[in-house]
Structure formats: C-alpha cells, structure tokens
Length: 304
Image (cartoon, rainbow, N blue to C red; front, side, top):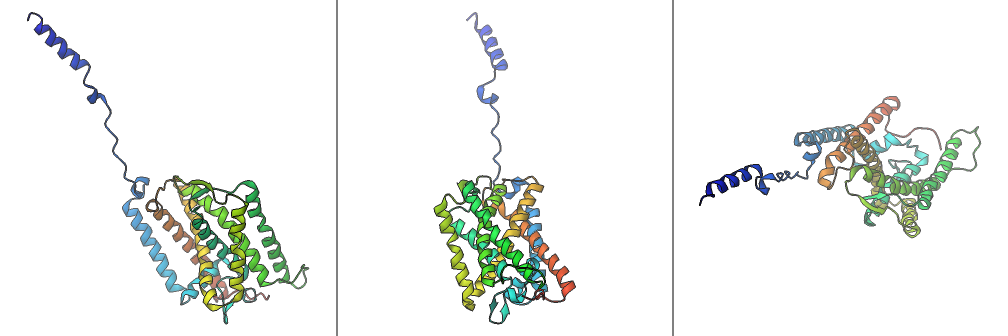
C-alpha cells in the first residue's frame, strides 16, 4: 500500500476544502408567530389599548344620560342637530338621531351587515364604474333635500317644498347603504393582508337586491312601533361608531405604516379597538363642548 498515506492526505484536504453539502446549506429561518407581536404590538401594548378603551368607556357610561337610549343620545349628540320636529319618536321620546341621520347611519350599519351576509365582508374591490356612479348619485337627493330643509329654517329665504321627515329618512337611508358599499372595501384595503378580490357588489342585480333593504327600513321606521323602533334607534348609533372606528383604524395603520398586516381577527383586534377608542374620545370631546354651550342633552331649538 505504497500510495495509502498519499490517498489519506488527499481525502483530508478535499474534505477540508469542500465540506459536506449539509454544512453549507443555510439554517432554516425561525418561524414567525402569527400574532399581534409580529407587527410590533407587544403584549404590554395590547393591555394598554384595552385599559384605555375601558377607561374611556366607563367614563362615558358614567357621564352620559342614564339608560341605553341615554347613551345612544350621547352618541347622536356629537354628530346630529337633534331638532325635535325633524326627528321620529318613541312615544313622547325623541330618537337619538334626526330623521335624516337615522336613515343614514341605519343604512350604513345594515348595509355592512348585508354585505357580510353576501360574503363580501373582506372585499377590497369597489363595484365597477357604472355601479359606483349609482352609489355616488345617492348623495344628490340627500344633499338637495338637506339644502332645502336648511333654507326652510329661515322664513325669509326661498325653498322649493315643505320638508318632510319621511323624505329626510328616505334620502338618508339610500345614502347610508351606498356609503357602506364604498366604505367597507376602503377599510379592508388598509387592514387585511389577503382581502377578497371579489367586488363588494358585482352587478346591477346585486345592487338592486342590496337597495331593496331601503324601503324595508323606511317602512319599519315610519311605523313608529316602539318594539321595532327601539332596536333600530340603537342600531343607527352603532352606524356612527362603525364609521368612526373605520376612519381612525385606517389613520392609525397609515401613521404607523402597518397597512395590510392582519391575516386574522386576532391580528386586527388591537388596532380596531384603538380606532374605536379614539372615536369614543371624539364623541366625548364634542359632547363636552356642546353641553358647555347649550346646557342640555336635547337638540337645537331651531324650529321645524
């Protein structure tokens, strides 16, 4: 075995210069846990959000009028004039929002619920242009009737017709449904990592079916049946909270550059709760300023 030492030396040098393939492969990356921790919201941060939310909520419950409708009044107080003659009533009690705002915010929350039932809860796509144009056009009668109603407040100014609560409710409801179909995809575009590419409304058939909710809601409100009107009044103020939560959630995501981070509701809830908390703070701030100047939880005394 004259060449054995030489072969061993060659084998040694080869192994040293060319290590085994396994040792040259990169180590597998450590899997990232799919929790809120991976987007920078620590457990401590999540607790801070919850503490802030419950602090604001408990203060609001303490500072506002008693009862569920009293709390709903406080929400409406921040966004609506609440003129008595321009509102529907539960018996002798004015609803938390005026007729137009009742229709608008009730349309928003019911519209979102319908879209979720349609399976479009995570849709990030608006309807095609022709459908989108129909949604936008609902603002025309809403705005026209609003201007006419405003002019009617001043006897010396001209107006085209005597405003009616049923007309305020009708224009508001159609606009609210349209707002839901525009607003939901907008929030989803900021929030979800993998939203649904299916348009929130795919065709005119779906649009018509969607808008059929409007006459149903309008009739239910016009009946002024307390058993029906009570939950509708609460739902309308939930529409206010939904819009504020969506707006502030999107703002927070943009400010902290965390758009499209959420894959599950577990990922999303901290920022959603933070958005709701800021919305409640806005409501409280407006309530405090308005109550300071008016000294009443009632609406403005501006006539019909």
